[in-house]
Length: 142
Length: 71
Image (cartoon, rainbow over all chains, first blue to last red; front, side, top):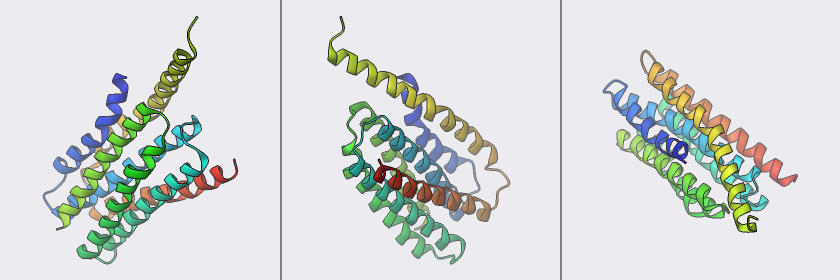
C-alpha cells in the first residue's frame, strides 16, 4: 500500500516541478502545467483501463468513462491550439473551462462506477490532483 | 480454510498491487524526466508535447470504447 501512496503524490510532484522549474513567464508556466496535465491524464486513463481489465467496471460504464476522458483530452488539445497557434489567452481559458467541466464529470459520474473501493479512492485522489493542475494552468492565464 | 470474502479480498489486493507495479514506475520515471528536461525547452516544444499527449489520450479513448463494444 506504501507504493500506492507513491502513485497519489505524483500529480502533486508534477505541479511543484512545473511551478519551480521554469522561467517566471506565466505563459511558459501554463504551457508546462498543461503538458503535465496531458501526461497525467494518460496515467489516469491507464488506471481506468486496468480497472476495466480487472473486471471492476462494466462495459457500458467503461464506454461512458472513456467518452468523458476523450472530452477532457479534446478540450486540452483545444487549449494548446489556442495558446500555440491563435496565441489567444481568452480562447485557451474557455477550453480549460471545458476541460474542468469534463474532469468534474469524470469525478462525479465516472469514478463512482468503479466497483472496487480502494481503486475508486486512488483514482479519485489522482483526478482531484489533476484538476488542481488544470485550475493552476487557468489561473496562470488570467 | 479462508472464507469466500477473504479470498475475494486477497484477489483484490493482488490485483491492486499488480496495478501499482504497472503504474508507479512509469510515473516515477516521468517525474525524473520532467525534472531533467525543463531546461532549454521552448514554449512551442512544451505545447507540442502537451498536444501529443492529448492526441494519444483521444486515440486510446476511441480504441478502448471500440474494444468494450466488441466484448
